[in-house]
Length: 31
Image 1 (cartoon, rainbow, N blue to C red):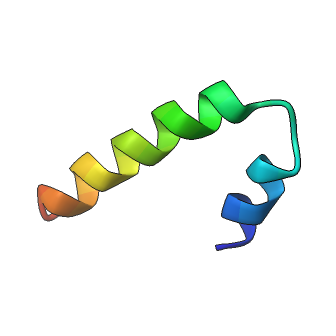
Image 2: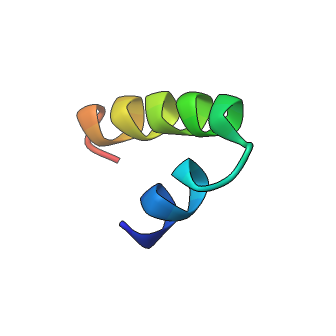
């Protein structure tokens, strides 16, 4: 989860939120 911490430490909070949602949907979809 290096990207997780990296993003949190950057001003890309918006991107992080969108990316997190995408990951959740992907993982939940079995991808």
